[in-house]
Length: 247
Image (cartoon, rainbow, N blue to C red; front, side, top):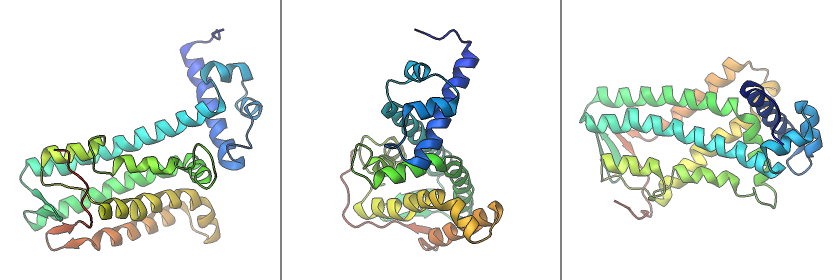
C-alpha cells in the first residue's frame, strides 16, 4: 500500500533510507547489513523500505547507478566545454598519439581548465566517499558486486557504447583509444581517486592534516602526473594496442 505522505515527506523518507544504507554498508559491509538495521537507522518502517525498493540489493544498485550517472555527467561536461569547444574553435587538433594545441596560450588554458575540473571531480568523490568505500569493499569479495568498480571502464573505453568517446570522435575523427590509454586512465586516474576517497579520513588523521591541506596536496600531486604527459604544445597519449574505432 502506498504511504499517505506528501511528495516532500516521501523524498525525505527515501533519502533517509539511502543515507542509512550508505552508512551501514560502508561500515559493516553490504552482506552484514540487515534491512531491519537500515529501517532503524533511517527511522522508518521496514515496510516503507520495501515500498521504495524491492530488496537490499536494489538499494545498492540504485546508489551505484546514481554515482556513475553523476560522474559520467561531470566528464561529459568537461568534454563538451573544453575538448569539443577547443576543437571547434581551431585551438586543438587531436592526432593519433597526442592532443596538439595551436599555441602556448591554448595549452595553458586547457591545463588550467583541467585543473579546475579536477577540483570539481575531487569534491564529488569526497562527497561520495562512503559509497566509494562500499564499492571498494565489495570489489574484494566474491559476489555480484565484485566487478562493480570496473563500471568506471564504461566512461574511458573506446567503443560505440561510450557516449564520451563518441562525442570526442564526432568532433575529431582522428581520436582513437588504445589498451594503454585505458590502462593509464583506470590505474593512474580513476583508481587513485577512489583510493583517495576511501582512505581520506584515515590518512588525514594519521598525518594530522586538515581538509584544506590534504585536498591541496592531492591536487598538486595530480598536476605532476598530468605535466608528465605534456611536451611543448602537445599532451602525449599512450597508444600501445589501438582499440577498434566505431566512426
